[in-house]
Each structure stands twice: as C-alpha cells, then as structure tokens.
Image (spheres, rainbow, N blue to C red):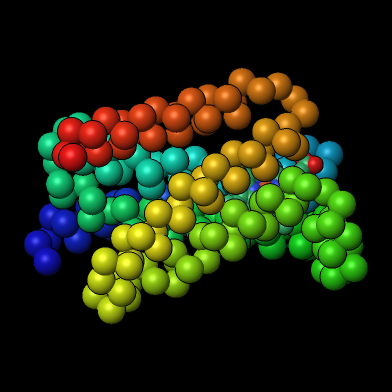
Length: 200
Ligand code: HEM
C-alpha cells in the first residue's frame, strides 16, 4: 500500500475519532464542573450524542459511492469500510448508553421498552441490520461471499431508513435536523437511481 494512502487512512481514522475526543473532554469537565458541558442529564446527553453521530456517519458512508461517481475519484472508495465501521461503533455505543443510563441494565425494562416504545423497536431493528454488515466487512468475507456480499450490504439502506424513522419518531424539539438528514438520504438514493438507469 502506498505511503500516501496509509497516511490518509490514519487521517480519516483520527478525524472519525474526534467526537470521542470531544466527549472525553466533556466528561472530564463534567467531573470538575457538573452540568457545565453536558447539561442537567449527562447520561441523556451522551445517548443523544452517539445517536447523532451514528446518523451522520451512516450518511457519510452512503455518500462515499456518490462522491466517487460525481468526482470520478474511485480511490475515495477505500475509506468507506472504515467510515461504516465507525458508524457501527457509534451505534453500539449509543445502544450501550441506552442500556446503561436509561434502562440501567435491567433486562425487564429493555423488554418492556422493546414491546411498548415503537421507536426503540425500530432502533434495535436498525442496529441488528447493521450487525451482519460489520461482521462481514473484511476482504476475506467479501471474497467468500462473492456476489452475495454486495446483495447483503444493501441492508444498509433499510438500516438507514429505520434509523431515520427512529429519529423522527422520538424528536421533540424541532424537525429541522431530522428532515435535513432525510433530505440528504433521499438525495443519495436519487443519485443511485439515476446511476442505475444510466447503466441499464
Ligand atoms: C442505527 C441505529 C440507530 C440510530 C441511527 C439512532 C439514532 C438516534 C438519534 C439521532 C437520536 C436522537 C439524538 C438527538 O435528539 O439529539 C436517538 C435517540 C435515542 N435512541 Fe437511537 N438510534 C439507533 C439505535 C438505537 C437503539 C438500538 C436504541 C436502544 C435500544 C436506541 C435508543 C434511543 C433512545 C432511548 C433515544 C433517546 C430518546 C429520548 O430522547 O427520549 N437507539 N437515536
């Protein structure tokens, strides 16, 4: 692998880790000055923080193919796996924040929420759809699954859709941001449709 590609991978990795660095800083400030950075309910703030970054990074993952085509830069595709795995990691941290701060690791509460609160059911379904994608993201699995790998990885579309539905469902303070995310997703899907029609 060329040195410049490796270097860029390190840069992408560090950029995607920046939210975690910010959160580390926020938590350290909270310890000395409670409520200053994360507000009255730090647990909820952390939960929302990871939820927001999951949506943003899933959209970024989906936009890699679009950017590759629009700018005629196939090399951009090299970073898609890393961005996708970061999106999955943030989704898992989001889920763990829910389990720790809201459900307090009480499986009875999780089960009740899963049955009674539809947005939780939808969120968990989105995460479950992302799981096989993360597990089969390696080159080895790509080779082993062949054409089926591409088909399997189309699960990212329903996962993104369910993630956005989950967000729209639970939003209480304004729809501007969720609708912006939905518009970006719609734009990326339209670009794929146009590309597919051009090729067939
Ligand atoms: C791909 C999967 C998921 C995505 C994209 C996602 C995204 C989000 C986003 C963006 C928010 C709102 C953040 C904000 O308002 O600033 C949120 C909140 C939340 N999510 Fe998720 N989420 C996902 C999966 C899950 C899962 C698996 C659970 C739990 C089992 C969950 C539980 C929650 C809860 C409890 C809230 C806060 C609700 C409230 O404020 O009352 N999410 N999620």
